[in-house]
Image (cartoon, rainbow, N blue to C red):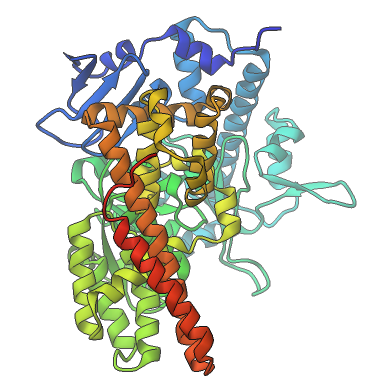
Length: 589
């Protein structure tokens, strides 16, 4: 029996990427493909390339790439399901009954969320406690028109107030539960409102439709959580939503800058103060998906946090993710315990001055690290390294990274080679369980997230994809030096089973086409390029083994085990010789 073709694949089979992109951009025929000015960043010389053969696009300026779906998603600011329906209609492909049912369920949830928004707004204006909530918001500095513009509401402290209202409006209980607005008691089976006695902030999608809610207490005992949010639903995924982006997206594009804060009121007050390029993550640490969405509008990101948050892992991880995504990141700082909303309520000019005086990430963290820790002590150097190295490792620009490596080495009074070795060690210290979970799909997220080793592996795969005759350039005995995701793909290539793996994943298919396209566009000598990439990868592995041996030798000397130290030294010398031998490309027998 022939394998069923998915609707997405059927759409791709019927539509030509040149026609789709040609509706948005002026394409010029160049060789076997087409070129245009990239729509995702400003440029004067075309670096956006479309391949009819591979049905993919790639910008060699900003790194954007993908297929017809990802292009339409980026241009229209929509999710995959919307892009699928839009392109399916154009291709004349009928979406299955199951997908139509999903679409119908999503539409019902949009309606439920809109009805809930109307209810909360009415309660804020008419309910007695709602009026106290209005007074609280006003005291915090929000103007009446701001409260209305952002559809802020109030959920009465009642068990079924919203539930009763929505059912009266014709919404079914199952839909209310599915929208995350009600909770079912696990034992009694009764259903009650999720949000009770809270100020409500609707969370909108890019089209301005409410898809979720954040609820803040303002009159309660200390036992209640300060904020509760809508859980994951069919229409709300907090890892892919930025609060306020529906209102901020045009300003971000016009000002070529986004300000990222932590709270709902921070965003609202910033907009009220004229900084309408401000957004916030929706009740979660900053994610790669959120950064990918922001990247559609700007490459410049200002991250605001107080000094208490500066050293925590979530903040550092967020900055690292942003740097890896090639954002130019600057830091807007405040005193411990202070937030933008408080600062704006006190004096809007003060907040604007803080934004204008934002520091570069490294200026900020160097200042923080060297003021908190003593660079003259081993412990201080360790703490400084722990704070700065993760951020330094995420810098993609080699010149910028070299500058800060030199600065760090000078301040710590150590050799630059020590800093580079520490960076290499950090890049190789991916936990085993994390490595096991790594998949080619994750590798498609943003190329700039990748380490040097990842980039080498991607390049080698791109070279192998040019023709089967190049498969002999990689020896199966060397597969162990690759990461799991790359090893799986190369094994499939060498065993000629890759087509089965590709057909099962649109993301993998797109990734492989783009990797092949990158090599084609560079017009390199495959044999020479492969030799260089494999040589560098071998050297990277040998250096890591040398580092481990050096640590073992030092430990043996501390333990006063000279014979063990001597044996390890011989192994180190052999690796050093191997490293020297690998400075010349390895010849294939």
